[in-house]
Image (tube, rainbow, N blue to C red; front, side, top):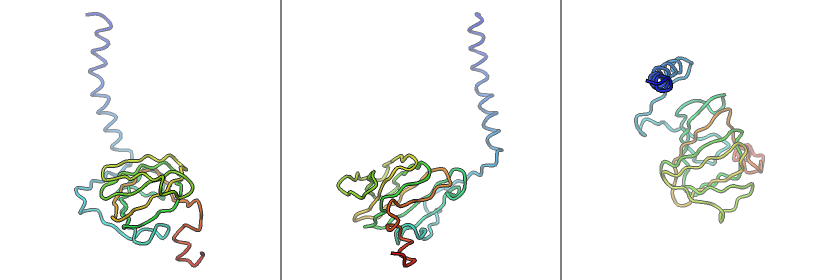
Length: 168
């Protein structure tokens, strides 16, 4: 057997051992595992004041206010607009149920929006201005990202929490 063949065989045999060692090490570095067996176990609460009224949110894993990964589930009612905004970190959106329109840009332009239906996915880089809106049906979506996250409206007057504080 050639030297190259012996080296290749040794490398192939070591991969499962190395992979198992890395997996075991990864299990012990302080990450909590969260398992959500079904949609019924996801508990929703009213969304924060800086999201439109009627928004519901569930923290599935992590905390978007802290450093590290997080997973949120968000429900927006029918006929809801989330005005143009950015996030401090990149995010992914996956549509779980219903549909929502998504548009890139610092100003709301509904004619430029693309509909995202159940199964739809969008990746948004850090600080990418975008807007979202629902029409005749509500939507449930999942947001994955790294914290600290946050939502910054392009026009601060669009922040619903300003209206609730009488700042408009």
